[in-house]
Length: 115
Length: 114
Image 1 (spheres, each protein chain N blue to C red):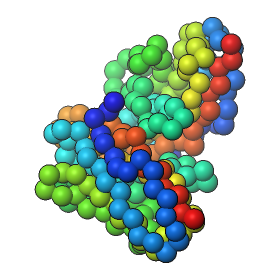
Image 2 (cartoon, rainbow over the protein chains, first blue to last red):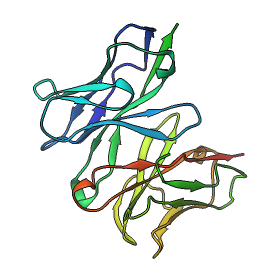
Image 3 (tube, rainbow over the protein chains, first blue to last red):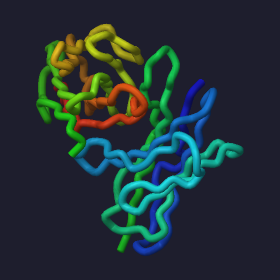
């Protein structure tokens, strides 16, 4: 079955420190992986994607993610966290079965960055 | 701003009622997806339309239905509402062709059933 797991419900980081939000996936075939961010009372905003190519993907707002095929992981990273990064982060994988293209989301990780 | 619009932003209604949520995709996007976000279920795919035709179905209740019109806007109809239907409903759109994997989300409609 296609699935995505985010093992941490919450991640707490001090401003200026590096942050990592973890994601592992299970798919048949090559994965199309995504990270989205949701700020309070807002919709989902696209951060970055991995389709093919370089395992280190750079995205919006200084975020990057590392695709690791052997560990089936796609962790989101940022070298220096900002208080404004505090939000809910979702990892997702595209499900190509049945001619559809829906996204399967992880349960989300609440990132809290303290000054 | 993703370019996807949803109306209304908020909806409060009573159990047993019927509501319609509306979505306008980005200009030129042919696919529309509906997702439900709730505290207990997380973000769940409901249904996808492509150029007016149903393409894929998720865990959508029989009380729920959707359609995509010739101008490509979509409506999600929820009937016989229950308290558990209270959630944030998102619409997303994606282009055709090689970038079909990109999904752009609207701001959502928050439904409260009392």
